[in-house]
Length: 404
Image (cartoon, rainbow, N blue to C red; front, side, top):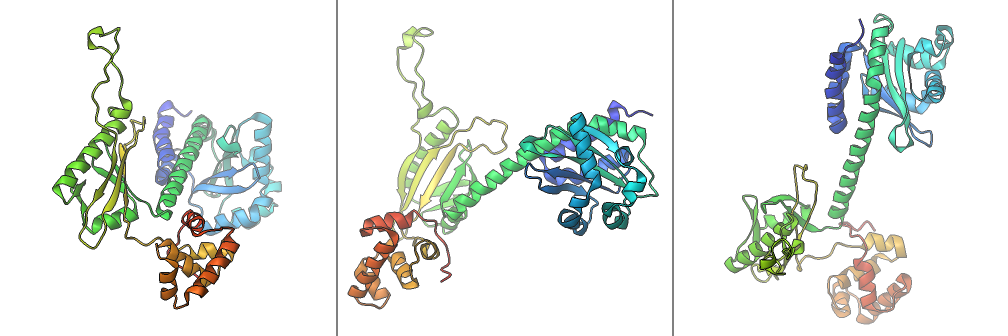
C-alpha cells in the first residue's frame, strides 16, 4: 500500500517541532519508527572542508559513533556511493543494494568492523542537496537482519519526507546558530562583569546578569520586589519610576525617541506640534547606607520589532557600584606584556584608585622602588604616563583569579 498524506502529516509535526526544539528529536525518530521500522537512525553531515559529523542520532551507541568518526568514516563505501549518486541526480534516496552489491559490501571494512558487530545489515538513506552552509548529508536508517530489508512503500514515504527533512535541517541549523550567538553574547556580558537588568513592556524584570543579581540581593538602596525594581528612598523611587516609564514607553514605540508631529494636511487645526511623550530614560544615583557611595543607575530604552517573542525587552538598566574593586588584570598583563607578579599587583592597586605612595605601602616597598617598577611597566606596555596606562588596563578583560 502506498504511503498516504495522513502518514506524511503524522511525521511532519514531530519533525518541525524537533527542528525548533532540539530536545524533541527523539520524539521524531520514535514517530518515524511507526512507519519505517528501525533500531538506529542518524543524520550524517559533511562540511565544505570534508569534516564529517554524526548529528541527531537515535539508537546509536556514543562509543560506536566516536569510532565511526575516528576510524571508519574513511572506509565508508556507502557514504561514498551515496554522495556520488547525489552528485549525479541532485538528491538521492535508496538502499544499500541500489548502490553496491551484497558481496562487495559484506567484504568491506565498514560492514565487518562497524555495521555487523552492531547488528546492522540493512540500510536506506537520503542524500539531500541544498543544505545551508555548504553542508552535504542526509539521513541514514538501519535495520537488523531479522527485521528484513526496506519495502518500496517505506522508501516512497522516505521520498515524500525528504524535502521536509532538508527544510527541517536548515531550520535546525539556523536556530542552533542563533542559540550559539545568544550564548556567546550572554557569556561576553557576564565576562565583562556588567550589572545589567532587562525589563519588559510592563516594567517587570525579565533577566539580569550575575553581577546585577549580586547588587540587588544585598537590598541596599535598591532591591527586586515582586518582579519590579524598588528604590528604598521615596524620592529616588519616584525618579526611578519616571526614568523606567519613559524608557519602557520608548522601547514600546511610544516614547520621546519615537515622537511624531501631527500632519497639518490631515489635521491642520492641530498645527505642527510634537505630541507629548515621556523622556526616554536617563541616569540617577541610588543612596546606600554609609560609608558606601551611591549606586550609579543608567536607564535606556531597548526596542525590538520581533513581536512574536515570548520575552520582549523594552528597557535596560545598568547598575554600577563605585565601591567595587575592579577585577584583576594580572593574568592578562602577564600574558600580553610579560609583567612580573609584583608589577601586576602594582597595576591592580593603581587601577583601584591608589596613589603610588599608598600602593608602595600595601606592597611593603619604598616609593622609589614602586616608581622603578612603574617605569618598567610603562616600558613593557608602551605607555608614557599613568593615565595612559589606566586606559590600557581598564580596556582589558578582567579575571577573578591571579594564576601567577
